[in-house]
Image (cartoon, rainbow, N blue to C red):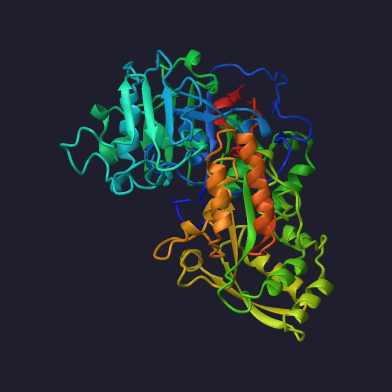
Amino acid sequence: MRQPSVIARRVAAASVSLVVAAGAAACGPEDNDAKGSGGDSTPHKGGTLTVLNSNPQQDFDPARLYTSGGGNVPSLVFRTLTTRNRENGEAGAKVVPDLATDTGRPNKDATVWTYTLKEGLKYEDGSPITSADIKYGIERSFAPELSGGAPYLRDWLVRAADYQGPYKDKGDTKGLSAIETPDARTIVFHLNKPEGEFPYLATQTQFTPVPKAKDTGTKYEQHPLSSGPYKVVSNENDGERLVLERNTHWSASTDAERKAYPDKIDVRSGLDSSVINQRLSSSQGADAAAVTTDTNLGPAELAKVTGDKELAARVGTGHFGYTDYIAFNPTIKPFDNAQVRQAISYAIDRSSVVNAAGGSALAEPATTFLPNQKSFGYTQYDHFPAGDAGDAAKAKELLKEAGYAKGLTVTLTHSNAKDFETSPEIATAIQDALKKAGITVRLQGLEENDYSDKIHSVKSEPGFFLAHWGADWPSGGPFLAPIFDGRQIVKDGANFNTGLLDDKSVNAEIDAINKLTDLDAAAKRWGALDAKIGERALTVPLFHPVYKRLVGGDVKNVVISDWTGVLDISQVAVK
């Protein structure tokens, strides 16, 4: 998943890829159903759902979106070959069929994947959805003018690395040779290497069908042809206000995942987070039937909510695969010395870091790089046990062995942006903890763009800095490979392998796991690989963020899965 505050190429989101941990999601202190004030928790069709968000639904084109981005709004309009299971907590981390009859049929080595479309699929204009439309939808996502979506297809599909989409050569009628459509309901993908997690990739919005005859290029976002339960009736100021109404040609008989209770969905964006939370708290007028998909409650707001039983019952808690951590560049002294990295690992006071991140309600301490969820293959380990407050004595002992008996001075690079992931407050908490171990930390705070550019360039990456990572889907693959696969080190572009690790055994294990189509078996091996890499102390996991979000008093059927960590609009009903 992209890193929300980095660049659009990678997720979790200042929508989703912004934040997680084990256990089922909850809505309110007792259960997962926000009942509202009427007492009847049964969801019914009808009404208007209002969505109050900070971030606009920009570039509302399936070629340019991440599935996890946009707070679930895109999935109301765009259906894909597969999708996420729309259930609370752990069960929601599974991939299930959407337009396809199953999650895909691989050949023996998982280099060829075949899908069959369900019968009776239609667009909003009543025309049939075909396999050729899905192939074309994928091809147009390769066009430079429609960039912004997930990058995997260019890497995974045979002979796709240099493809420039269907607009460059108007005479090209074959398109990507890696995708075959032998008939209107069958589509076959040929991959460069085994990819057992292709069913996860097929949830990305690039797999949305787009009929070639209706493609309007960069203007398509104004009125994309819906394959989902809702269609776009207006898109103002590039997603600042998006109004959706029912697609009468959508059939629930072909879609087991989306409930589509409201008649209309009004998405209003560009709002200040405090205004959003105040409106949801007051729950007056249309705001009583309102939700947010990208705005957390802050510590002060949570304190107020906790003291109000009615408000507390309207708080949804979400968990999403995300880890905030310290990153080391071992090519820079003194971080080339493993004992120095280990000493810092021991010295970290996670309780103070968690407090700086908003407290235990908004952050859970982490000792593993993988989020502590089953789908990722979470395997508990703590190679450098520091307790809640750090082990300064052990850290000093290691520093002495490393030749720094009198301590040392280092610089910690962080962002000045006021988010809880790389903020000055977290940097200061680390500075205070390391001081107890004899390590003087100088803080280098940078503006967000400068920070992003610096830490994601091999040429300028500092030795010691704050970082974070979220998964594009709930698996160890998109979590570990971008950070620790040596073949993904990018020397002349955006690099995410912060430790510059290029270990043949690690690379080989990543390849071996990628061949597995048994996702449960793959998860166990991702967990084991995480534990193995953790011994190198290339990172110091700090915490997994948690979502806490209000819903209006008339909102029912709140579902928050471990796939996205945010309320699933496709399940919501209003009074």
